[in-house]
Image (cartoon, rainbow, N blue to C red; front, side):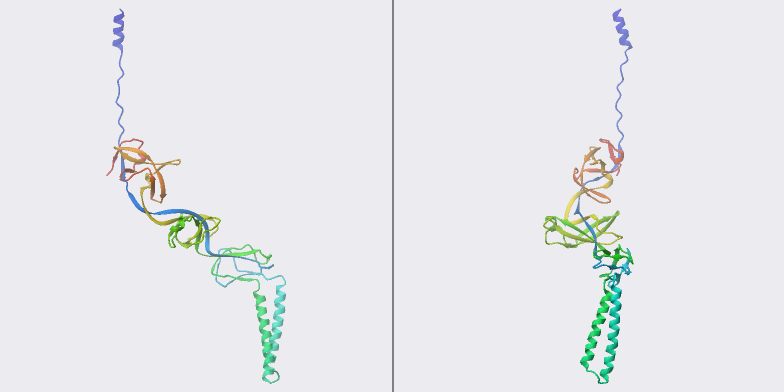
Length: 329
């Protein structure tokens, strides 16, 4: 009876059927064989953006602003009168000088007539002429007193005063700059100064605009406090209307090197981690990389890839780790 029951139980047992795992479908991708390409090394530096020539003017003594040919953005010519701020009693001094000058001019004219008539000597006439010249010059100096002319052609950048305002000694009147070019002053180490050649190409990026410039000045004397050398790069002004801000520039050192460069679309990033997919034995393999320079189309690889490897350049968004891949020719 027991044997029969066991037979029945055995006979009723249905073993599980094992199923083969479904093979992953191959992902079609495009790939390139990695190789090194020559490039010029670039280094980044921080510096202060300035106009190539600028000047600020303050009152040398107290006075009232009577003329102000200046507003921010206004163009001025070299020698043009920009501001006049005579002292409080200045107009009275000018009137007194004009009266004395006019009186001396009449006396001199009278002496010239007397000289023709033989009534006075030439020495007497020359004395009157000298006194008239002195009074004329004094009047001109008084009229030009506290008159500021533009020392160069440029653009007014700041005007903190207005006509009719009384200003004190040392008070700011206006600022101006020659704005056709801008400069960035930055400091480099004694090691880097050897690569700072006059005329070397530099790049300044402002408001997503890349401006090309040149190194125009290099110091031969090290700043004792900074332990560094001052370098100046000049750029054509392409819409820059401010100065004094800190910016970053990129400099071609002139050192030619070789490195692996990959298309930017091949690079993946998760947090601070950068990686790519390469093909090994028909599969997509993740490879962590350390990047260097980059531009709009390419990224420099410092570590993680070798010449001769196949890099997935298109279709990598469809692959996973160890996904089988086939290359589209």
